[in-house]
Length: 186
Image 1 (cartoon, helix red, strand yellow):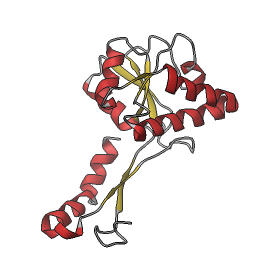
Image 2: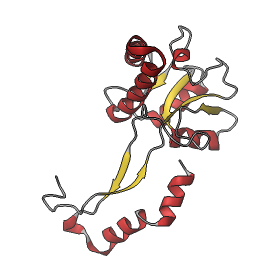
Image 3: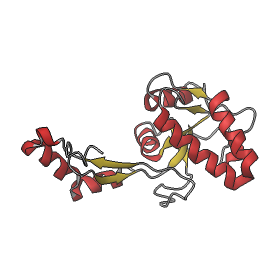
Image 4: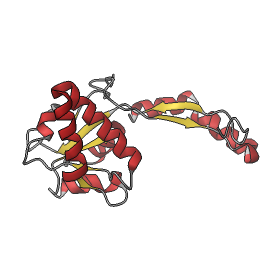
């Protein structure tokens, strides 16, 4: 409603997430696949963002994995996945996109659900440490299925301070140059 009250310009979408993947250690030592039942094995330790400190990312990851579990095995498997994520997973303390890769690198977790763009970054800068397992929405599987909870990112300008810089920033974020960068970076 801020734009209705004319405090900001109309929010305009400029990017959308491409789904969730599973980040694992290079070589996939636990031989995990895109099957959610793999994540429910007793010996598998999942790392995930905190359901209390990072509600938005946890919501995306848990919704996606529970939806995929429902498709694979029905309500019972979906409920098991939810319980696993809340009660058995190792949760980040503050900033999941910094802590989760460290948990996997240090063998404190076997797998982590992550936004594709984050996993792509880790695999790109640390190819000797990580790989990911697609669940839809990646370069190899470009269309995330309806089970994925996707984020749409918007740009808007605060009306009070709009000036040339705010408008220029919004124009840049909506440009083909930025669209190309976001597409390349997942």
